[in-house]
Every structure is written in structure tokens, then in C-alpha cells.
Amino acid sequence: RGRALLDAPPPPPPVSTSEWPTPPSCPGSDLCDPGGSAMTTTAPDVCDYDFYTTQGVMTIRAWRKLSPHGADRLYNLARLGYYDRSALYRVIPGYVVQFGIAADATVATTYDASNAAARVPDEGLNEAWGGTNGRYWVSYAGSGETSESVKCTQRTAELFINLADNAARFDPMEYAAFAKVIDGVEVMDRFYAGYGDVNGCVAHAEFAFACNGPVEATMYNTGISYVDASFPKLDRVGWVDVIPDPGDLRGNMHGEWIQNEAGEGALSWLMVCLFLVVIAAGYARRLTVNKKMGNRFLDFIWNTPSIRALVTRLSERKGVEILESSRNRPGEWTEAEEVEWTLREPPASPPPPPRPPESEVYPASYDVAP
Image (cartoon, rainbow, N blue to C red):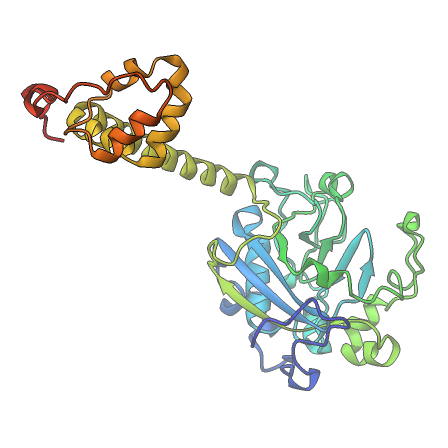
């Protein structure tokens, strides 16, 4: 499945919706048992998720150390097809995009927050490693009820993407940001937002959006058929590809990394710089010790006609005789050099004396092995 082109207006779906996988249902799927072995598999330390949507592909990268339980849940939900054909049902520009109610009602009700067995263990915001609800960061939606020191509880499967820097709003509420959109942010700009917030909303009036979106409880109880019938313009997630341990080859368009990765990267660059300094120092020492090679290099530069002519013109008013007597050029003058010297200013200056034997120019003490 090739990555969809994202810059062609209007963008078609990456693949026809008729080719989207059939969403899982219960019974018959490992998703039906939130506490089973298939749903408790440990996620990779870093994992990418390519969400193929009706507007193109967006890539979310999750770091397990920011929220181990949350990362494990996303890994298992995505690889088992939980998000297939689900709706992007809450799109509020300048605020959030929310999704995560399964297309099949039997699976959706299994992950309703009222089912205690489906809840992800509470985790606070991991600020020590850079977790924050900044722009494009991803967190689980929760009830917001207080449970000991953690305020965001009852997480199951719903995710929201911060379309703005919502750290001041969500960080104090302990929404544990653990992933980030690293590619395809322009796709989110095209998600349909005409219905506004979910039906019956009373909060976030500052965004001046209507509350004409779906009723979440109805989505859980009836599945995607409710969205198809009443909210046909909403965009969808077709399927999700899981890429464990992606490394840096997939890139990061924002150039932003969580704190530990930035630190490890800085250390790597420091080691590379130190290595280059050692190489340069060794090379400089070799040039210093092996003076014979250095002199021959200078002779080669001096014997280049264009360079020699330029140096002569620049130095003729500053004592050409001193320059010529100190250059240690091997061999006798050529006829062309004598003509060039004769034509220079002042013309009355005699050519320099012949160069002494090589044994006098390069004493044996300079023949040091590199």
C-alpha cells in the first residue's frame, strides 16, 4: 500500500473505501478480551502508526517510556484492527481532533469506559522525559475524574491530537501525552469540521463552534452505521499500519524529539566532533613532522604559473627579492620563468641564484617516517 499523495487538490482517499478491511467484531477477535494475552503484548520502545484516512496518510510516533500502559494499548489496538473504518468524529480547528470509537458496536461497547476491565491503568504526565500536550502531541481521552494524584482516568481507546499548544489546559489535568504526529499534519487540516463539537457539548465555547456532532453514547451502541446515516461528511480512518522500531530513517518533519532522544543525539554528535578533532590533530602533526613533504607541497603550489604570477604581482612592491630568496624551490629556472622575471617590474632586477643541492635544503634530520 503506497503512501498517498498529499498535495493534490482535492486529495482522494489513499485507496477506495470499498477496499478497506472489514472491521473486527465480537466474538471472533482478540479485541474482545481487553485483558487477554493478545491485548497485553508489550509495545516497542518506539513505534510508528500510519493512519490511512479519507484525506491521506498521517504518521503518529509513540514512545513507550512516556506512557507504558498507554503505548501498549495503542500498539495492540492498532495491530488488531480496532481503528479500521472508525470515524474522526470530533474535529475542532485550533483545538483537537478526536477519534477511537470502533466501527463495530460489539467491539466499541467492549472498550466503553463503563467497562472497568477495558480501562488502561492510570498514568500521570511524564514531564521528566518531555511529555506535554503541545501541538501535534497525542493523548488518550479520559473521564477527567480524580483518582489519587492522577486526574485523567478511565482511558480505554479514544485518542485526541492537539491541534494547538494545549499544555496549559491539559498538562495540569495529567493527560499523559505519549505520541506525536510526525508526518502528514496537512492531512488533519482537511478533516471535516462542519459539525463542530459532539452533540450536547457545553464546554469550549471560546472556539465558537456548534455542538452538532455525533452523540458518543450512540456511536458506542450502534457503531459506524449511525455515523453513515447522520454524519456522512465526517472523515474516517481506513486502517492503520504498524511500524515497530522505525529508527530515524522515516524522518521527523518537525525536528522535535522527546528530551531523552535529543540528549542521546547531542552526545552522538559530540563523539563525532571529538573523533574529527583527533583526526585533524593527527594530520596536522604529520604535516609538521614531515617537513620534507610540506616543502614539496609548497613547491607544487609555487610552480603553478597562475598562482606564481598572482603572488609576484601582489608582492612586487613589498620586496620581491626577499620572497624569491626564501621559497626553497628545487631545480633551475626554466626559460619561461626567466622571460616572466625579465618582464616584471622593475625589469632591472636580476634573477635569483641557482638553488643549492637538495641535501642542503632537506637535511637528514627532517626525514621522519609519518
